[in-house]
Length: 68
Image (tube, rainbow, N blue to C red; front, side, top):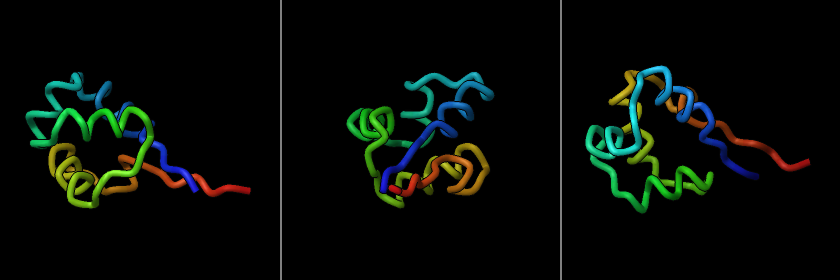
């Protein structure tokens, strides 16, 4: 099973938000942002912080990709 944050990237583009803007707005670390860029798992707390920034649901930020 894998996780993809492509939806997050689209949200950032649609909101004209840069990486540094999201770091400040969601109060997350640069290490966490690196994990997001590498499609690595992050905590539910981080996802909830980003949902608050974008006023959305977790499914609007990421998706789980099942292995065959």
